[in-house]
Image 1 (cartoon, rainbow, N blue to C red):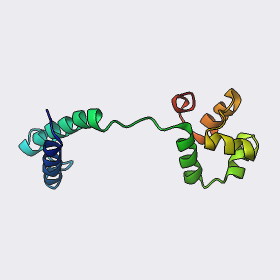
Image 2: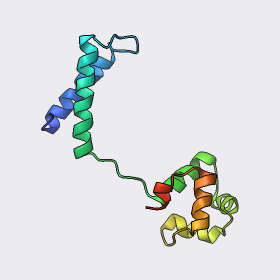
Image 3: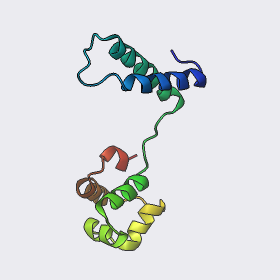
Image 4: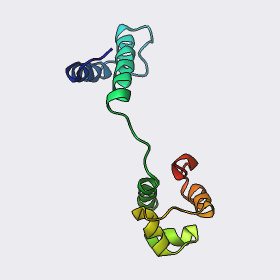
Length: 118
């Protein structure tokens, strides 16, 4: 179990070293492979406690999806069947989408309902 940031940094360096010698062809019984698996499990446990990753907000995910799909607010409004000012309200957090719009966000932008309904 990792207890300090210094231990965490040392183990991260060791993982970098192991990644240079362990690959997809390395047998699971190989000592380097076993060490890498043990260390990555320890790092994962430490990071879950000390560096938790929060679920992104709907606003953040919509902005990311707009970037990925090369959509302007006007194009997004057209795609979702709402006005451009309404999209602006969603993106600023001043307004929440209706259930109908939430369904469109899910289907047309492929955003998880768990993010939409949080």
